[in-house]
Length: 115
Picture 1 (cartoon, rainbow, N blue to C red):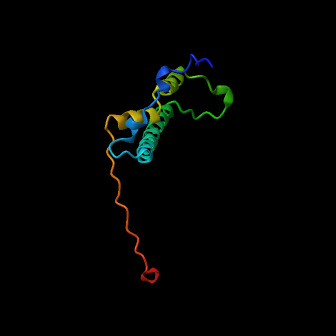
Picture 2: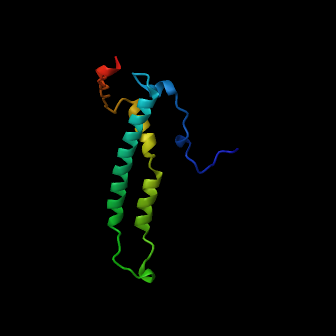
Picture 3: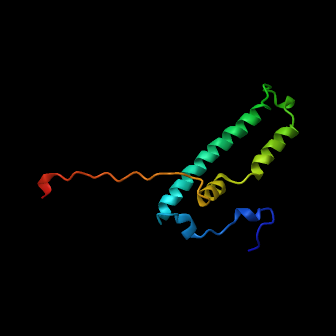
């Protein structure tokens, strides 16, 4: 299968699991942290895009009067070319820019009747 020439080469990167597991060696915890950060970045980028596109909002309801706005298209293309939130979150994690703590597990009291 040939690679798609339209796909940027930086979007397809093989990652070493040992790099992602971090200091504690738990890949699942690392993936959970990266996922939460990617969601934060996604929300932030979406808000920024919506704010910028709101400048172009039209109060016209008539479809005949709606026209193509080149500036609006350029803003949309700019955000499409940006790295995906998941890629940004992985890079932040690998560079040690994400600070997180793991809560201590709670002890569950065992009823005395079981002894």
